[in-house]
Image (cartoon, rainbow, N blue to C red; front, side, top):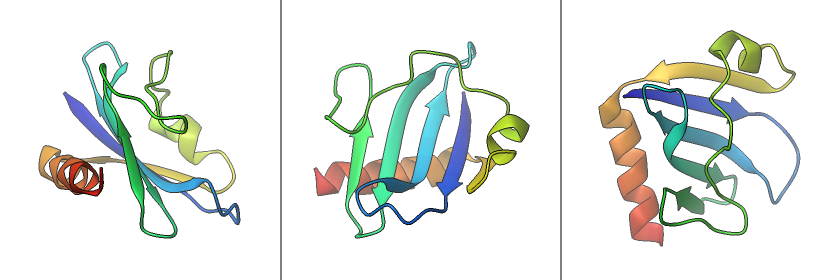
Length: 93
């Protein structure tokens, strides 16, 4: 498994500002957590989605490609950081 964090700098009130994803060996998302500016979070996995949070239907692009887009910054993280965020989102749910 690999874990990635993507920060999105923007002024949209109802859009997430931080995404954390767990990726399988094939590059597809297995689990995802989204955090919003107001402190709320949403999550998705194979059995749970919300109107605003779902797993991507394509493999995760290279970090350089994501970070090359205006307002986006992507980096690899360790499993512990992802699991903390996942647990936080589960409590909020």
